[in-house]
Amino acid sequence: MPQTRPTHHGRALQTPPGKTGPALRTSRWPTALLAPLTLALSACGGGSAVLVTETANPAAACADLVTKAQLSGTTLATSYVPADTRRPGGATSGSFLPGHCVVTGSINPRVGVDGKNYAIGFQLSLPDQWNGRFLFIGGGGNDGILRDTSLSSSISGGTASPLGQGFAVVSTDAGHSGTSASFGADPQARIDHAYNSYDKTAVASKSLISTRYGRKPDRSYFSGCSGGGRQGMMFSQRFPDYFDGITAGAPAMRVSSGATVAAMWNTIQFNAIAPQDASGKRILSQAFSNGDLKLVANAVNATCDAADGVVDGLAQNFQACKAFDPAVLQCSGSKTDSCLSSAQVGALKNVFAGPRNSAGKALYTGQPWDAGLAAAGWRSWTLGNSTTTTPDARYITLMVDALTNEFFTPPDVAFDPLKFNFDTDPARMEAYSAIYDTYRDDKLAAFQQRGGKMLFIHGMSDPIFSAFDTIDYYERLAANNGGLAATQNFARTFLVPGMNHCSGGPATDNFDSIQTMVDWVEKGIAPQSITAEALASSADFPNRTRPLCPYPQFAKYKGTGSVEDASSFVCTAP
Image (cartoon, rainbow, N blue to C red):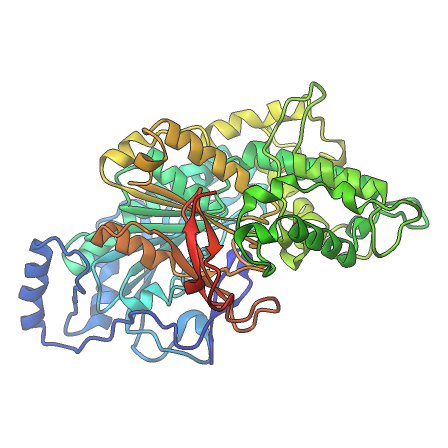
């Protein structure tokens, strides 16, 4: 049976049978023999070797952390999970986890100016048999929860439980409890959410690791998507010596400025053409039917799918999709199931071109044309599924919450998103953007100098953070670091055709980005491609595999071999 895995915002996906990864199940050697072996391997620099550290009584060592920890202003609680008693995420089938200690911490508890209790919470899992690696898994949304550290990163669902492999793994709630953005009323909570909580969590985790195992991690990694992708970028800029390898999936690098402006723009465009109920109010979800979106997706593929050498439902060469114009679908007469109204065509053009102010200045990048716009993940963000005039699109339920409580300075909780002023309201977001957004530092000089490696991964049908924004950042990074060839020595970008936000869509969205990063950092194997697959449960391409290629390359069909097999494709320049 497949085992469940997490994705951004909690939807469970599955790891295919047999994809268990290099699970660490070494023999339980006597401590007297383990200690010198561990020291000897550590003296050699660790590398990719499995470093086993185990005490005679790991449960007691777990409990002792509360008194032995050298952390000021921090309260700790521990619980010990014996080997073979729990599966990743509490799954009912699949491999069991090894014995491990779960440390729950609370840093700098305080009462905010809003009268609410705050603290930087974290969960750190420490395996009895440690491989010398530390992994920080990023959050997402408004954060406010502790992500299960027995699971993998939300941009690496193809990775078997890193904890099960022997990683020490941590997550944080980012300094507040609960997924509402109401914490934005407290200035310190804003700073914690921007960067301070991650700094404090990383430092505390490494200290606890040193206390538990008697030495610091050999290698440290960060992996996250969406808000977690932003957090990874933040570490590379503010704390460049914390991590050896950082994976930033669909990074929310301009969430408190451009991307949220785009969400308001898109909502206004779609709402304006949505049908009305008897009282004259709009039903946002009905601006486009699922059939309408499928019509657009098919037309996109008709334009650019063949540009990668084979018509297979995946447009690997996204450059060819730039030629798509939804006007080809406009009805010549009345609206039917086989065409779009002129209002629908106009709305699509405005949304995919991106928001502008009254002077025509672009306020965010546009969106790539990609067939993933017909998937459920695209609709859930843009239109929602509510059949009433109360919308449930995430542009409204999540982004407006963040905008009015946190991104506006000062907060404006009564703000009507349908009245967003594209000339004046973006200026209200600049103060927080200056400390929260991560698109400005396009040099990463210190991170590169100390040998750090960076992976950007982005779905081409991401409806909230445009893949074009990641491409723009990467091209600026390359321009400041001697060009693409030189930049690929420390940073690479991988685009996933068809993928929605962090996962989902008609895509090969299941891949092991964590092992990819470990191989790059520890073995010097820079990723020439990442093998990705669609799960057996995929409604679109079950069991299909594809190579994800480093930008600007794309996967092109060789002309022979099964179109379902990655080996039939080669990464090539446009």
